[in-house]
Image (cartoon, rainbow, N blue to C red; front, side):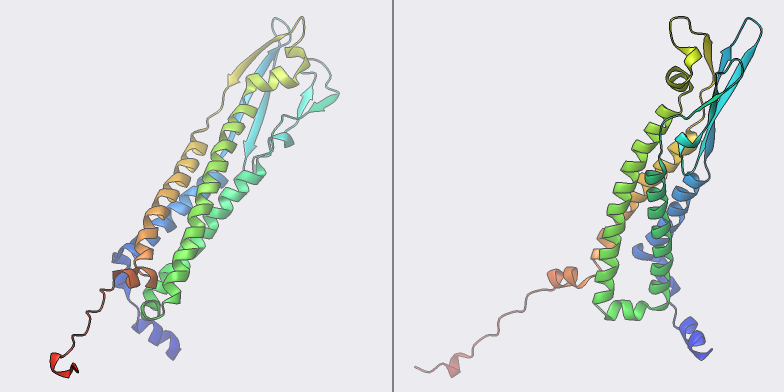
Length: 243
């Protein structure tokens, strides 16, 4: 209890007003938005097949995190007794989960860094290894944001393509192709706004983490050594020069 009381008494809440503290809180918030908008997204597209002049059948393709589109089932033939199951193409579990992993890791690290800044600021300033470690970990997370955001951006483009109902019925529904196809139409092309928002937060995280590296670098011994003024040469007393 005494240790906890002492820790609270020595906290430096003012560090959150400094760039390294304020930016960490900002990173914490937008990391939550990045992985929450990805995990919380769900969407669907739909098409219909006109079996005769009066009867139509609709089929929906649903997709959500982790975006395994090929897990969806469509019973065919659409018109008549269905005796076969087809699956749309596309499994985007890997890019989606990697993107969420980066967001969660950044979220956890921001919590740890803020605790370090507020309650152990004295150790942070006196021990040169801690700022260097903070800088290196931030570099790694910045690179992960770059990779994760680029991979997820491509994943979103592929999800749009593979869930396009016109492509689904053209590729997978026998009645919609061939010499005498039935009338197949898109009834719901889907809403991908949530996915676009998720990738926007990914690249926003990337830019914020890149900007934060400069402020963290200034806390390291590498920067301080470069900024330290050179020592002036000691003058020689002419009276001590031997002839």
